[in-house]
Image 1 (cartoon, helix red, strand yellow):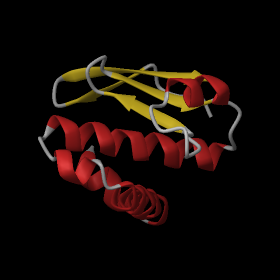
Image 2: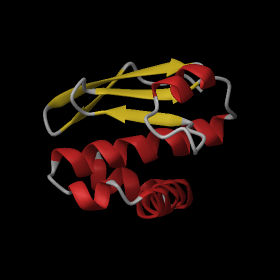
Image 3: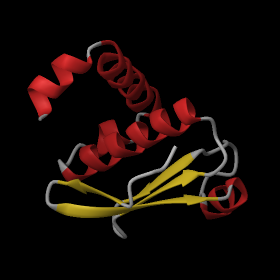
Length: 108
């Protein structure tokens, strides 16, 4: 999947880039978990692990976009809830996949 170069979130342009899995792990402050994506709100960037299957890349991008939205909207506590963010990412991805006309009608 070709990632977008940028995503606009609340008038803030987030740069989107693919990076190696090793680079994501090295930049993490939490060495106990594996990371497939990362949102850096202060730098307005989203980094996604390269080489994943298309569906995994898409869900990871949605997951990271949700982190950025929560941060920009001031939901700091919810932003740290990985299970909630992941659940929302999967639910939104399935909603879009199963209801493309609904998504086009609401968002476009």
